Length: 460
Length: 174
Image (tube, rainbow over all chains, first blue to last red; front, side, top):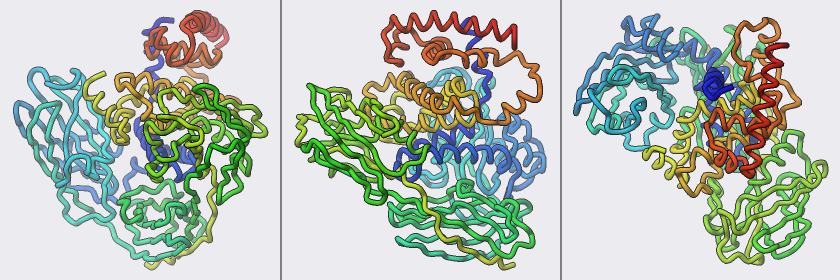
């Protein structure tokens, strides 16, 4: 079997782009906030959510506030396999923009756009005679901003995905941005400014009208308070030609106690959504309030109320212990999980830790633990513990070792040996065992706690 | 690696998650397909991609030379895939893919390779994936797999042999 045949066959594996992008962003999000949820669960749920998006959600649009009407254009959406775009184009629900701007030899043609209540998609083409100053011949990059935002601090760019097709002298492009606000402003116009196209400087400016189509807003205001200052606030339901959409917010001022919705069910027993099907529309982290939209699938027309099932996700701060003692215990404050260090030995530039983990762990968490111990234990120079930001716990460079070589001594009894290389890529300057602490955070192994469900009446 | 990518890698090393996300998005097909070669179903492949992104973000600070980003990333995806595969190899998830394979005899000639590499020993499989699909040299494979070059050479030749055998069996029985 030759390389060519291999590559041809492997390249024939169909790649679900949206789902892969979602998995990438979820993985990074989890790593940024490592205490938020168990990874295995997120993994499984992401797959389900991804299927949902491809399977139903976007193919059949929901609260459909689309745009003005013009024909044609289905073709370009078809090229990018954008099924929703094709459907909307067929129904005359995309906006024909047909704007052409030429700056410094680069022609930008914005063909059309649509808005489905969740996402704004823009398609078009870009041309230039001769070579581009940047990138490979088959690559294109745009440096751009939406509205009056600048640089990376642009909520539209944050969730932008793009694809391209190479054509003669240029590219066709397809951009999709998540709508970053929780309410749809009337007659909104979205100004777009492109600063660079493939290394060519210019200012290509155009606007996309983001109009809403008929849908009615049903008041669904209710605020349910929980411990630790958390609350869930249902706001309103948008009823359009298709699936209605619920808008709700969750406030979680206490980082270590976060409430989420696991599911919602109407009084006829239909499950309307699970928490993971919700889309985060606003997560300005300053006020600890996140706003979500969620489709109410299967909502019975005669339903009188919706019952919500909240869960509490617990976590705790990272645990630290002095390494000067030879045997010690790092015990979780909220569960029975504990790390019992049996011995600490230093042999030249290796630090060898022998320990057991005890406490209640289900099978999946045990597997997680075994996979993670090589990363979860960190040695830190005592004097630099204060430099660690709990929310983004990067081990301080030059003062910590966050990797170890894990040996499983007894899988059943969770007995392990971790060998830290004190002279590897990560190191502690002037390492002294007596000046070093060991840290672990058990939060990712905590189970969620089911909270009392609450019911909100539907007022017609 | 292109200069623009190096800039992104440098940003990512400094903890810029958006830069890392862009980099992973650029290589999304390779990441997914590499994962797929181990587990051969969509759900598990997506889990591996997610785990790769998680591990990548948590450990990118340890990447000292930005130009080695791809090798480093490949190492992570391979390790995540092997881990996942080890955990899951006893469980065959009943996916639509498998169901449809069972009910209708496939007319497609494709995927004979996929079926064959499933049969290979783990170290052979990883060596072959890196050699054929990632186009890595023996030296690079030895770095990624943390094995001596001699062992990689042996794995490669024995892996090729084993693959040929599996493919032949596929043709006869498949």
